[in-house]
Structure formats: C-alpha cells, structure tokens
Image (tube, rainbow, N blue to C red; front, side, top):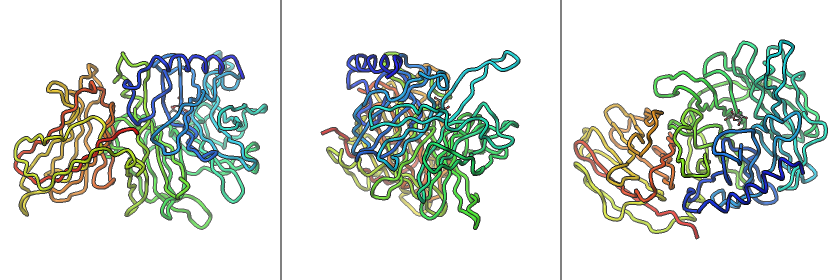
Length: 493
Ligand code: FRU
C-alpha cells in the first residue's frame, strides 16, 4: 500500500471518531470525513452493495481525489470500509476521478476510474490529462494495474479532445466488457464514447454512442448506459447548461436520454428530460439489483450550490436516497427504494382534512420522515390557487414546497432555512395538469428533502441545513382543498 493511501486510511479512522452520529443524516451516506462528491463504483460484490465516492478526507472542500468506500446489504444502512484509492501514481497524481466497478470472470472486484495527471505542454502551459485506469481487489484492498492507464489519448477517435475524457461506466454483455466514457470534443461539445474489451484490460475504441450537438451544456460528465423497460437509456450530467423553460436550469444539470437501438445497434434518441428538477442532484449512477430493479443514486449536491454548508460539520456532501427507476410513456419514473419501509416507525394518517388557511395537524412533525400528501379541490372547479407545505420549521427558519394548480408548477424553497449565502434557494418545476389534484411524497432526512411528485413523475431534491430541532410541519392554502396525509417516522433499529 502506498504512503498516501495508508495516511488517508489512518486519518479517516481517527477523524471519524470525532464526528457524533447526530451530526450526520440518519440514512443518507456522507463521507467518512471531509469531502464527498460523485457516487463511484456502485456495484454488487460478495453479496453486498458497494458504493465508492469521490473523496478528499482531509478537508471539507474538494482536493486531490481519493475513492472512499462503503458497503450495505440494503442500500440504507452503510458501513464504511477503508479508503480504496489514493492519487499515488504518476498517471493519477492529480486525482483518481469518477468511475465504476464490476466483478471479473475470476471473481475479483475491478475498479475502472479516470486518472488525472498534470503535465506541461510544449508551450509551457500546464494541462490536466485524463486517462482510464483500473485497480483490482477483493472488496476492500485494491491494487492498481501495473500497466495503467488502460485507455490513453491515442485511443481517442478523431475530433475528440485530449483533456476532458473521464468517468468510465463499465458493464459486461455477451462475455465481453464494455464501457462508456464522457469526452469534450476539440470544438468544445459533449459526446459519449464506447470501448470494448475481451478481458477488461485491453480496450479498443468501438463507437461514439451519442453527440450533444451543442444542445445540452458543454462537457458531458458521468455517463451511464443501460436497458430499461425495453428501451435504452443514457444518463449524463452536462456542465454549463442553459435553461430551457423549467425543464433544464443553468449550470450543472442532469440529463436522461431515452431511446432504442436501430438494426445496426446504434442508439437512436426518442426523448430527453432532466433527471432531477430540484437544486441538489448530480452525477447519478445505477445498478441492476439481484431482483431485477434498476436502482439509482446521485450526489445530493450541485457544484453550483456548494456554498450551502455548515461550518460546524466535519463532512461535506451526501448521497441521494436510492431510487428505483422505470419508464412510463417514454418518461423516467423514480421512486424511493422500497427498502425504506423496513425503517418505518410510527404511522400517522389523516384523510379528507379540509384546509382553508393554515393547518398544523397534531403529531405531524419531524425531520426523518416519509410523508405522502395528496390534495384535491373540494368542487369540480378549482377551489384553491395555492397549496403550501412548510417543514423544518422552528418559527423562524423553515423551508417550503408550494403547488400552484393554476399554472401546474411546484416550487421548492429553502430561502428561509437559515442559509446566509446568495446562492440558488428556489426551483420550480412544471407538472402534469391534474385539475388541482396532486400527490407529493417527501423523504425528509436530517439535512435534506427529496420530493417525489405524482408517483415519481418528477423528483426535486435539495439540501436543507436547518438545525435538526426545527421539526415543525404545517399546511396552508389560498381557497380550500381536501388533503389526505400519511406519515411514517423513519428510525434505525
Ligand atoms: C463530476 C466530476 C467528474 C469527475 C469528478 C471529479 O461531478 O466533475 O466528471 O470525475 O467530478 O471529482
């Protein structure tokens, strides 16, 4: 083991002990200490789920990337394992960037990641060069392959840029290994490249899977590519997006391209949409669970909103709650992984509650809950023009979810949650016109809110860092409406 990895392992072990449990979310994964960004190497190995993450253990800011590591049997309760990778080789000295993992034919766990190296070019300018590398291990300790990198700049197709070439996602099919990887072309546009290998070590460029053609942002990061409900899906996280109405927002976004293969196996696009319509979600990765479900986890944060932080926390960054994904009418549907039900505590349910101004229902409160709220008009015509759920409320700080049935817009808002930074605190999302009827399912953990609208047709996620003692929940409306609410407290065994 290199000194760098040994030092990281010793450091995280010590530092972790200084972080009280209550300072972390109850069931969203945070870094063992320090900084976390993208999920990496989301895979099954030795009967468990493995999740690695972009990791800088020493500070709560981004630094030379390591890979942190955690395992779980149910995707909710995680156990930390020692850091898996440190930037300790010439080819990855500036960082072990995002990647994926797979079990090899001979039962080993193989990590495929991007190595970043800083080098001076012939004009004396310093550039970061990105290549694809592998490390092979037993689920805890990994050895970098002696002949890394396994995919270099000279294996790029014509027109591909040599600097931005990262985030390989590997899979196995018909006895071969394949991977897709993000690339920024020479003319500054995103594209996803596919490579193929017989042994996982010797890779050959196969094709360009998809080109952005200057539509969604610039560089496309963290691709994932798989079959779902008889369609083919490509997920990616574009940088430098321009907004399109309420579908895509400025900055770092997420994109799901739904398509199918033509007779030559080329990907043909049918529909493009955002993955998450909230504020904090990026770089998701999926896995096929043993029972056939496609599960997705993203970084519940966004590069543009890293300014929302608690200086008293020795960790930064958390993963989203795992989501089951499927398709309906060629649109992405996301639901919280059903494993959440094993964490249900007290259940409270109220039906047909008439709301006509503001209401707090006795016992509906909490910061770790799964709550389903369904509202409808009291008459055939719209009987209300605004509905609001306030949560994480202590009388001073609070956050809201607002539904405007006249415009079919849901808005999330953390402007009053206690943040002192001028960053994005609100986001709006266009939803289906259901004539005043809407279903809002909230997963609240200590420091986040994930909203699943209309049974997963849209999801809006945001970090909320209000003091955990702010547990108030209330409902308001302009006009009157009927509401059904069912809430489960979430608890650990
Ligand atoms: C996405 C990303 C990846 C890269 C990693 C670096 O959030 O920029 O493209 O591999 O983060 O930490």
